[in-house]
Image 1 (cartoon, helix red, strand yellow):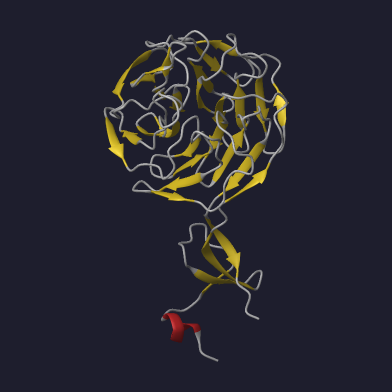
Image 2 (cartoon, rainbow, N blue to C red):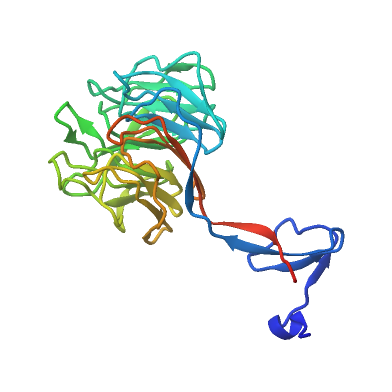
Length: 330
């Protein structure tokens, strides 16, 4: 039999417990479990069904992670303030909802420290802060609007784009929140201003906004992507599928885009590596726009939205990850 050193040019490390910080491609033998193991890149990249929302709705606000998500506001039979929490399996109604019922609002933060800003109807300027049980009033947006997109945390949030008035005049304005008040964060650079219903990812000082709509009807969908560094906006590579009211998750250099309107609803899913977008062969099972979103590029959540009928469906995304794997030798 050919020795491993003859193939790879290195010995297999023998350890009594698995390394705490292995590198991708590393191989070792665990003498306690008598198992040969390795650290490998496992590619799943697929959506699976999760528990349904208790209240089906579209244009829902969202925050959190795949296993600790928050859904708030939106439109069901009317605009609503209903707030629900997801634990990775099912949704639970919070006893109290938003102080101001609205839809097409921005969300940011976590399940226990979330932010809701703007929304329709009426070009809302309202901001509300959630502490895990109740919503309280926060600072007022400088530019009231709906269909804006948010990212970041409750005390360091960013919102951008959106529409002003019922005619949905696109806004390129961006604002950042410090936990108390909003200040200008410049303007998106895209022209024409396809800023209505973008997707988002990242934090306040390293954000990504993508997709959008310019309010002109079919053909007004955008594939634009822009990056924000805490000071200014820069054009980045476009999405492969132009769309708006889509979901987004992840970071500025590891983002996920899913769903939206093209103008038909879509379940298309794309991954961004900081340089380019790659289309996944696996799309959402329920094609929809105006959906809620949470999580990361490797562990995301999609919920609610329009199909065009209003949906309560939740789907969980499992992406590529590096994991310890047992190596079989027979």
